[in-house]
Amino acid sequence: MLYKSFIILSSFLVFFSIALEADDDPHKYHKLEKDEPVILAPGWHPLKFAPPAPGTYELRKIFMAEDGSTIDQNGQSIMLHELYDNRIVLLSFIYTSCPDINGCPLATAVMHKLNDKFANHTDLAKNVRLISLSFDPKTDSPAVMKEYGEQFQEGYVDWKFLTTSSEDNLDPILDKYFQTVIRVKNEDGESETAISHILRVYLIDKNKTIRNIYSVSFLHVDLLINDIKTLLME
Image (tube, rainbow, N blue to C red; front, top):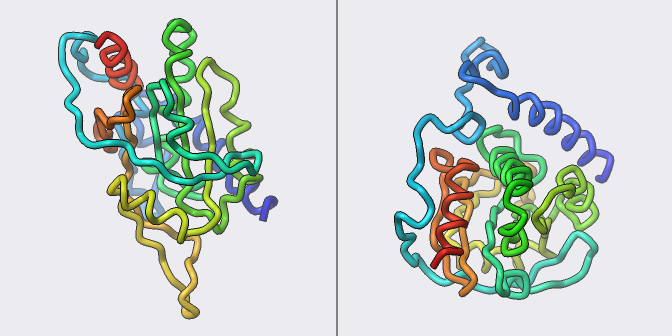
């Protein structure tokens, strides 16, 4: 399983490194079989508009970020609220074998860019934690998440790569965050590797309240950094 995951990760990193360099012509980086271009999400490119300055707007309180039992990349059990404690948190639900470049790879790429951007904001970095939680515990074991996370560990923000012990343990967390996941079942009723989901990344304040939920269209490093600054100015 580790070898399979390593191959998947290697393939992802090749495309990930290319996509990070994407310019205003994304069509040349990815083609479908019928030569139909894939449009990369805004998060892969420089922002095409000037976002509002930090502190000039308010982020409404959406709902409480609930707790849940997870397993870190070292195989240790840890509750989400332990990781939320006195930090601004960006939480994304991903799985390491996701084939959609505008899905889980986008979430990871934007967080990676954010981690790099904190090089110029080291005073803010200590107040922030990034969390990538897998919704494929069958494949994404702690060892797989550790191997996946090692590609992105160098940076200025503490970044946790988590999984759970089973789908039964994970599903209550997904329900609490209204994260829709549809698992493809085989003839035996067991989950296969293909997982359909809607990309959501959650911004959580120091009081464990969700203050923004980013979709594909609005997940961009410049918006994240301004929203984080805005929360810290409250």
